[in-house]
Length: 567
Image (cartoon, rainbow, N blue to C red; front, side, top):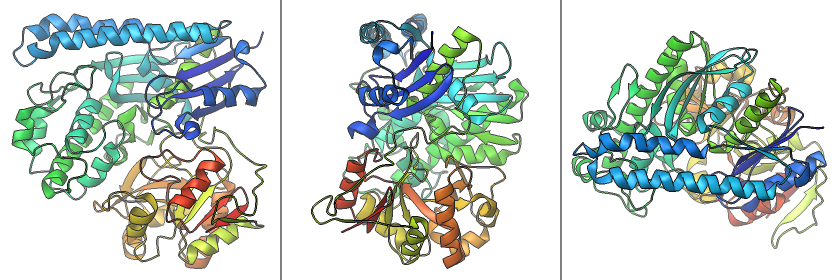
């Protein structure tokens, strides 16, 4: 009998599905890319339907459903309640917190029951959330052994876990150390993100970008008091960042912290220097904590290779600081380090539990979603749009980019994770004057201080970036070289760094051709690359979504599966 394992991140933010058949990864898809709702919480039915269709299977064929949470582990929070009731700073929230964890435990158990109904022939395999993250990070790296660091807001009760990964061992993941809620770096970053007027769980990257224009020293002492650190990690000060209650009704920043920094900012209010300064202090502290956690992982695992996962792994500046610290030979972040990627990790855990083997098809892969190779467009796919089939698309695209056009690119299989990696991208020339302002104002419709990431041919990366390792998934912010600052200032953020994607012909033949052709024209095989979407919408997963993006934004053109579409 074939093993058909469906891994799910379902009914929570970043809903997604992954499919393993006889231990081989068939594909992975995030539901938002198909239902059009950013950070979709819907059951990932579209993604599941696509995956099963790819494999020629039905729901009745699924032998195991692996879920990315274990409901009984939420009950562990109750053991902390007596101590929290004894402390003045936590007594007011201790009982609501306990009740909220019980509620989520019951809700998670109910979701497992629903899965049993949806897949009546399947065994249910709930997986500890951080363990699912760790599987994804380790398997994506391809390392023979590594330290694994997972940092997020919350997984059951864990918030930070350190592992030693040894894929060839009978026990491939060994837990070395853990921190539990309320010590949560993801919670702290999300709390201050919300205080500054952006959506937590979505716009932490905006706060990271804002930080580059702030003075971290202004609120450094305040944030150190809010997030104290020690040799085992860190804690949170409940007088400044109150105890978590799993409900949006409870504020996450105390009046005391607000009084010592700034009042809550309305999302439509102007961004002032005080907001940038608070963001800078938060970002600086996050970097310090992350580097310390990486050093602890290095010491406990005795490995010079490091995999990092969880939502905080998307803080690319912190990842860059770890890479520059010198105690790791290479730092790897998977393409989907956040919760969506745990669908892969949950499936991997189920396969190993049943077979004793490691799944295949995960290492180094990011292009795992739907593709549309036989797309056929009418001459006018939307009112005001004209489509023409073209040959030698790479050269055509490079010439238009060199001429200053901003072009959407929709080609091949959908990439996994939050970064556009050249299959659902918006590309632009970094040599074009005012390109960042134009992209922010008329294409992406987002804050003017937001930077744009570059992609570069891997063998030329050292000319432009202080980077000593591959960066295929655009996960690391590193300093730009003097050459880049002189010739391509548009790709350099205010802090002197760039979140770079390195491209090889093996990883993406078409994109490598485009970069080479653009380099032949301009002398610089570097392009600005941002996701094919506008603010508030997910990356375009379907041709219809891509055409809508062209029609509704300041894009000049869209290259979609060999069709050149213009306004």
